[in-house]
Amino acid sequence: MKNKNIAIVGATGAVGREFAACIESRGVPVKSLRLLASARSAGRTQTFRGQTLTIEELTEGSFDGIDIALFSAGSGISRQYAPIAVKAGAVVVDNSSAFRADPAVPLVVPEINARRIASHKGIIANPNCSAVTALVPLWPVHQANRVKRLIISTYQAASGGGAAMMQELEESTRAHLDGRDYAPKVVKYPYAFNLFSHNTAIDMDTGYNDEETKVMTEARKIFEDDAMAINATCIRVPVLRAHSVSMTFTCERPITPGEVRALLEKAPGVKVVDDWANNYFPMPKDASGQGDVLAGRIRKDLSDPSGHSISMFVAADQLLKGAALNAVQIAELV
Image (cartoon, rainbow, N blue to C red; front, side):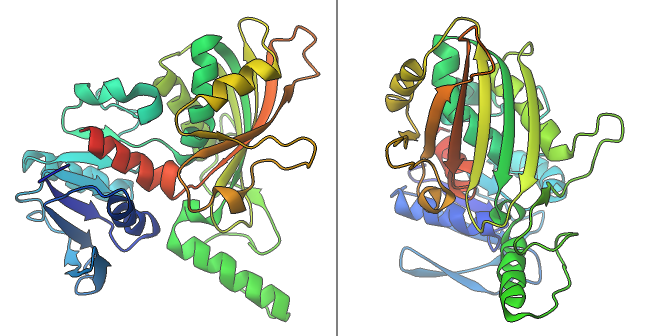
């Protein structure tokens, strides 16, 4: 990205702000940074490397001279403006779901399939945050002993819904503790001290919500394994930041917890947190604010006497490795 002109679309959102923070913290030598958002945010300022940058309104002319555009403003904005950015000469790294299922668009997790970046035609998709969290630690296992079946349950933080959902969790929790009524604005159900099925639409034919379908579809695409059997249950929990995933996977050959642990200890982007003696395993509080996927609770699946199955628990910062950091890593490779 040296001497490149970078644009951030959705600069005032939770992920948009993390884009800039990741570029700054990683010391990426950019030539210029352009912050783009809706008209109501235009004119605000943000600090970047000691400079005060003014947020500009996103328009069709926003991408003149831009080399790389990082998008996190929703699928509708991406569908409208990403092709415009590409036509202007930029490479787009898109954090929405708009292009993930498109077979012509690479869906990239750098630790897994960075080679796919070379096949882009102007747009590269950033995967679903829960898919990234689950797949980064699963990939080294899959390489050594193919994972043929995967069952996951997610515990997704408010950060997955953006700044407004994080604010609602804080406000509703404060109201609950004060004994005050609080009418939900962002989510359908009370958020404080509650959990509920992920707030995306349910497919009336399958019973799965959009988030679950995304995780299952994207996992197969990233692993390039359409035969992998996957089942997902996605739940929103009253955690401010960082997603967690419980997973049980079945390999083609027998595998032990020790073998899995050894693979993960050498895997890029993974930190093993597996202290049985002190009952200390991955937690959102430890995952928040750092870029690794924490992996632990690595144990035999006792329901499978064949010895082919392992259960484990992982956690990652949704705003970082689940979103902004992964996208910035892609941009660096571009």
